[in-house]
Structures are given as structure tokens and as C-alpha cells.
Length: 358
Image (cartoon, rainbow, N blue to C red):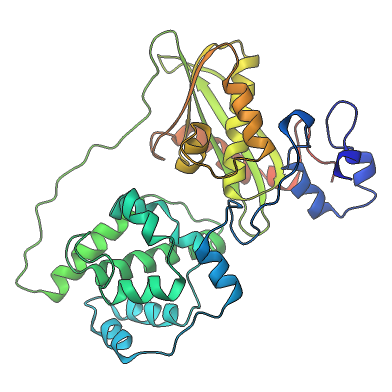
């Protein structure tokens, strides 16, 4: 039984586990909170979804080969798009189901472009219906400006480029959001393929930066870093007062996990550090919207997770604390902390209380 692998203090019994399991499995277990009796019985999760939630579309794709025979309309539409040739080729490969996955389709970019209500329908469709409908303008045409099929193709291509950079380029640093990148690229395409169209006047947008909390409060900025090649994850964060004065920080390796689990771990660790630091009026900021929604009860993802239950227990203590989402620019200090962890090699050496002795 899993419960037999827990010590009397409620921690994983590493002395027993390391005689039974290889290091990669131990590192995955390190990022999994041990079972706790008062959190209830174990419940099954949907293995074909990252959030362990059942979706009809994921079941449909798991059970059936949904690929349809190629239709000339699809190919004609792809090759007629007013985009560079590399985007044409990318979409041609995508129709053959060689690129996109549910993870890319769930990107926050779609929420920004289409809005949450439309995304709920957008993300629930079987892959072929979703892809063909967007390419042929049959689903969401009119939701975004200009020709939706062209914009959709550019969004997909840039999401894929970003994914490849993260996976293959160890020196990759993301300097702007995919949405900003796409906006510039689409405008360049419109100008290139429509010579009579003039370039718009450039409007300088203010760059968001860190904002201090109310006086008497402390702000913590937390973030997680996951090595996509092996799943090893680190969490870190910093705490500052209303004047921006550094108060304390933390950084630790947690084991192997998904991005969402790692982001939840860094929130839990941030709450732990804030409470033990004696802070009782705390703003905790993360640049992961899904993790913030889970903590605030706005998402049912991972609702049966021990990790989420522990976060809720911290939030319900006798103090004033709030968890909120901010963009990456506003969370730059927390992000830098985990980036330094990665650069320093700590992703290969487990540290901190509770980590497995691999």
C-alpha cells in the first residue's frame, strides 16, 4: 500500500523506497505529497489529460483514429494564406497530425485572443474538427481581426517555434509574449502581401514592472522552472516590503513534475516561507494563471490533489493572504530566482527538506 511507504512523521520513507525504485521514479515521487488521511481516500484521475480531468475530446482521441481523408479545400486554403512559405509548410505538416498537442492548444494565448467563453468551445473539439474548422474559417471567423485562418496559422506556428526553442535551445530566453510576437508578425505579413497598405503608427506601450504591496503588507513573487528534457523542477521566490526592500528568499529542487504541479509547489512553498517568516499580511504573485485560478477556487483542475488541499489549508490559517496572477514582467524577480537555480546546476542535485535522496 502507498500508505505503508510513509513514516510516522508523515514523510515518504526514503530508506525503504530507494531500495525498491530507480532514481527517476524517486524524483517524481519527491514532487508528490505523501498521502494524508484527513484529505480523504484516493480517487482515480483521467490519465489522458494533464489536469486529470475527463474531457470528451480526449476520450475521443484516445479511442479512435480521428484522421479524415485529406480534402482539397483544406490544402487550397493553406497554400492561399498570405503568410511566408515556412508557415504554409508548417500548417501542411500540422494537418498530418505531426505537431500540435492538447497542451499547445490549451495555451493562454487562445484565451487572450478569443476570450474564455469561446475558448471553452475551442478547446473541447476533436483535433481534426478543431484544426480544419479554423483553417477554413468555419468556426471562429470574426472573433479576431482580419482573416482568422491566417491569424490562426501564425499563432500555431509561433507557438510551435517557442516550444522548439524551449526544448532544443538551452540558451533560449523568452523576451516577449507569443501574442506580442504574433501581432508584429501578422502586421508584417499584411504589409508584405498588401503593398498599398501603410504601416500603422507605432504606439509605445508602457512596460509593466513590479508594484509594491500596500504599506504594512509583504509581497512574495514566486516561480517554478522545469527542465523539459527530463522533468526536473525547481521552485523559488523572494519577499519584499512596500518600499521594495528585500526581506527573504528561497530556492529548492522538488524532484520531477509537470509545469502546473511545479507552479503549485512554488505557491505552497511561498506560503510556508511567508508564515514562518512571521508575515501576516501577504500578497503572493505567480505568472501561471491556471495555478492562481486553482488556489482561488476558480478552476476545478486537480481538485482532489493533496498538494492543492495543503495549499488551501495554508490559505485558511489566521492571516491576511491572497494569491494572484501577474504577467511575467511583473514577476521578473521570482522568475530570475528559478532561472539562477537552473543555471547553477541545482536541477541535478536534490536539496531541501523532503527531497528524495537520489
